Image 1 (cartoon, rainbow, N blue to C red):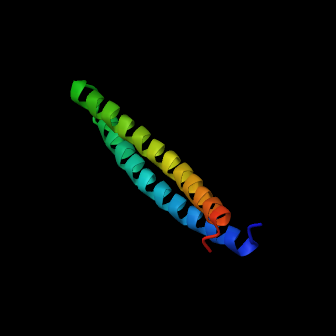
Image 2 (image 1 turned 30 degrees about the vertical axis):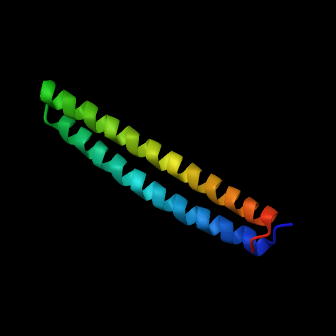
Length: 90
């Protein structure tokens, strides 16, 4: 059976890497959202519309990176912990 100490070590590692992914994805989303906001404030026109759409797409990509990165961190460290327990690598 997995000890509480091992469980908490795995949880802390997953949380740290998950937070890093949230920061990276959040920064990308903020940059994209900022570009979209600047384009929206400049008025109408095809160039501004392209900036608005491009910024929105970048913001969505940033959000996807944050969500998938966080999920991947949880899965990675959970699987590694289970593998170590099964194979007795501690």
